[in-house]
Length: 274
Image 1: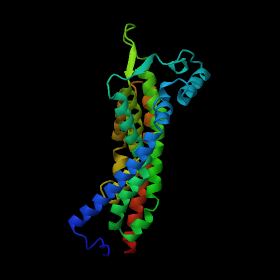
Image 2 (image 1 turned 90 degrees about the horizontal axis):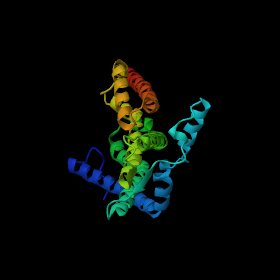
Image 3 (image 1 turned 180 degrees about the horizontal axis):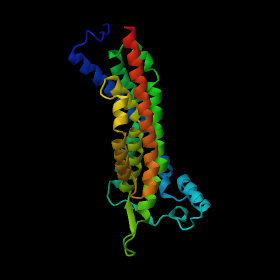
Image 4 (image 1 turned 135 degrees about the horizontal axis):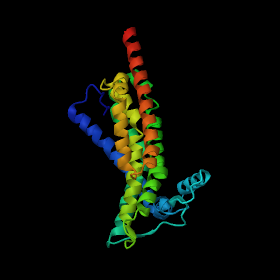
């Protein structure tokens, strides 16, 4: 039985094709999650709980920077955090193992998931569009992993450091639940990974005519406000942390404007040759 061409496929055929791509993507995540589950000791002791120790590279770097500028009294130079991590439910550690493995599997398998999505979309593109989008998977995966690294090494330690040292009364001791710690690491890393996909999103929105470089430039000041609000949501409520997070997002926004301009320019050139 020969495979149908994209023009001969009915709506149900498209749904069937999408179903198989989703199955393959899910299978890739399951395999990656299984591998992550096997190496759970490394996942938890080194990755998840890494930012909860003062030996974490981010704290050491910020401590050195603080000392260089003459700031001696800083929480970045403490010996340890004033909290303990505990499990308060019967199935808490088991659930943490399973769900952390799944999220880790998604991060590891992200390029493959993206490949399956691209395999479903690309047959509907023109040959020249597929040719110009050859680097899509590499760039999108690179930006995602770059965002995950940024979220893990910047947002996560800043959040943990601020919240761990925030104290409204000396009578209260911090005993954080394991699910709360995992949630900070997970949300910070994944949110940053998706935010770093902004140039890719702008590229496709420009291709279909929903966004133009003029539109992005016109509403740049509103984008700045949105970025600052977003930074305030995903970081501790201190100015330094918000600025650290806002800077790369603003850079990504500016890069997105250039990408949008390039797409529009190429489209105009093609229109002239037609």
